[in-house]
Image (cartoon, rainbow, N blue to C red; front, side, top):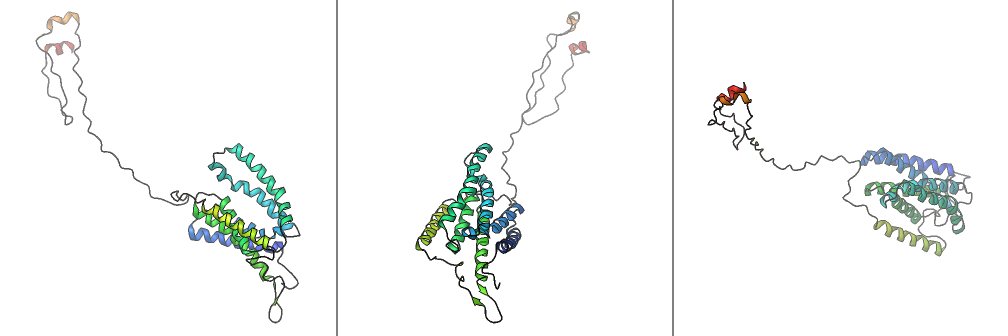
Length: 290
């Protein structure tokens, strides 16, 4: 660390990525979150590890971070667009200007209003980054949103902690404190206007996040639930329909064999179920049909 004033870009991205991998493994083991959710949260932690250097004069962290944000933010807003009834075509039309504004407009604005090691390197800025991640990642489940939002704050704080460690110069004796010590993990900046703006933005985003809670009755997409049995209505007993006896006409040459005074009896089913019908008396008309 001697001879290096601050941690470089590659150091920040390597450490935040390692922390993101550990955070993803912890989320999967502790809460049994889906693998895709854990990997996405680890990616948030990795990218957030270079976010404080958006105010850097070198331009490399700002260029890389803004390029990634321009590509990822429209995709993270997919569920927001879907909730308000947008179809795929409107999502593409809405995502294109968001990409252009972040890619080509955000860098110029940040460069004009920020100074290196200003309020971007502060604890309130880390919380603001987490709140922005919470508002963007509308996954429908509060636990998943908290998990992803904390990943952003964790990666941001990793950057600040590395800057403070690099502010100590270790030698043969006690570590020597550099002038940059205390400029990363801070609550207030040197300029009152920047500090006031940061805390106003923090309060506004906190208010938005508090009023943007997910419906608690919505089930977790990865939870296994026992099947719910619906009550069944008792069946009514089926009564056999009574079919009337149909008499067929015999041939004309056998009319003399029919006894008109003998009519067949109808066989009816009792109300309580099926029973074998009683024997019907055989007549000469029946013999005529045989």
